[in-house]
Amino acid sequence: MSGQITQKALLEVSQRVRTAAIVLITGICGWFMMELEILGVRVLTPYFGSNVYVVTGSVIGVFLLSLSVGYILGGWLSRKNKSKNIFGAIIAATGLWLWLLPFFIRPVCEGIFNSGLDENWGSLIASLILFGAPTMLLGTVSPIAVYWLTSRASESGLNAGVVLAFSTAAGFAGCLVTTFYLVRVSIRWTMFVSGIILAVLGCLILLHAAIEGKTKRTLQ
Image (cartoon, rainbow, N blue to C red; front, side, top):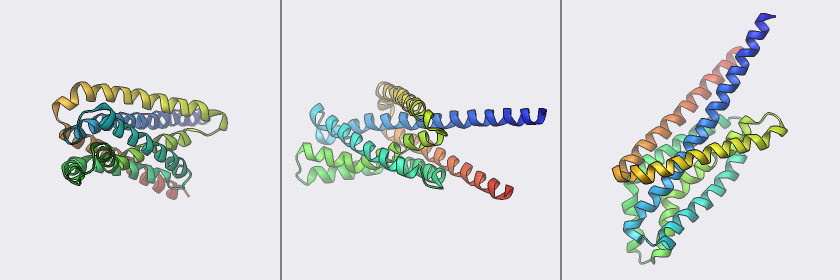
């Protein structure tokens, strides 16, 4: 009897740790999503001007469009058998993109600027090329997280609320820290470090998925 109680307690602790880890990952991704959006406006300004109706509008528009695609993609990927491997690969790929981004900003922006496009279309296309893919990838995180957390249909609303609330709160913190401090330190190094953090996080998820898969095969 005591063994069953101990096993049940361990399962409950394991479930709580798993839930906390999933929510924490969504928060980390929410932080870097807002960080990238703030940095995006900052890096495009020297090439396309600081007009709020041009650069800022282009960046926000691209982020909204990319997130909408990411949400749909994440919902579809969540039902795949190896969704954890996909999840880890997505975060690692996003980290690699952020790490490489400083090398591409200047050639992309100068190429678009020199092509003769006006600042409206130029800033929009530059935003799409530089920030569309990583934002879309980050957008897949929340739907997958909600799917993992939900074991009964009655829990779906609460789980979605928790994931979105925590991700948004973390994004708020990332927005303030980036605006008040990081842009004044180094945009390049901020992207480098952010990319490394996300890449490491993705690799850890992939490692955990590999260990979990090996354990299940051993038990079988």
